[in-house]
Amino acid sequence: LMKILIGTTSEQKINIVKDVFNKNKGGVCAVIPMQVESGIVEQPLDKETTIKGSVNRAKNAINKGHQDYDIGLGLEGGLVLIDDLLHLICVASVVDKKLNIYTGISKDIPLPSIVSEKIKKGEQFCEAIREYEKFLKNDQNITSALVTELICRKESFTEAIEIALSKYKTEII
Image (cartoon, rainbow, N blue to C red):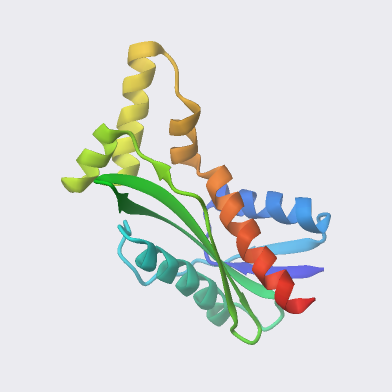
């Protein structure tokens, strides 16, 4: 049984992790959530800060947790500026018992320009994207798959976790 200490208590993130490990490990793992700090700003606006938050969450889960674990896992979402438009990235960091770090980063997803501009003016991403989602529903009674992914981040976190795990598995084989 693989034991994973994850640096979050977010049910959404925990379920994403369980889905990835059930797919890759056949369900023979225990995901143990830990309430930890990321040690970074609430809304990271660059790749380096987002990576640091992910690594900090994994390490802090290990430091707070018990000794009986296989890996620590940290997840962090952030924004990066590309060609004057903010993009979402998701980062997953696996930290093993020797404190080796294996980081995966999802592909970037461009934000709708109106959301990007609001964030540049200081609005929080979660508020701006949900406001945009309401606008779409009111205007067309639909929510695009892109907006759903920007809110839930399931595919992006899955991609980041799988990349980090592939780096980790390469080292242990």
